[in-house]
Length: 123
Image (cartoon, rainbow, N blue to C red):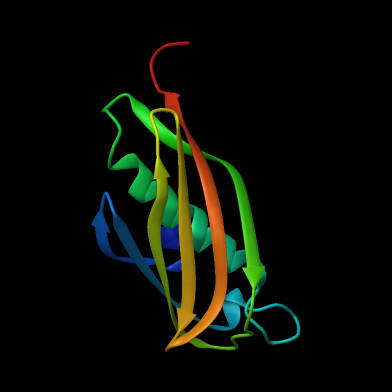
């Protein structure tokens, strides 16, 4: 089972310029204090950015995260959150994506994700 299946993350849209993921936050994604764990925002951000970045790569290449910076702006207890990823820079080796996680119309977190191209060929 992969992480998307484990957390029941739904893929709503995938293009080279926009990726949209959703997650219904339940007790499973909460800290002991009853708030959504901040790592959930990071998981959504890196996942959405990786999916988008991989749209530009060849069959034997993968975009892998090398840096993520996340600012947590609003607490969420339960409910549907949406992550929207858009590219800031799509270079030959590095890509930088901006990912905003929202609960309804409120910004929950914003992340900048940097990814690099990795060859999947024989080492």
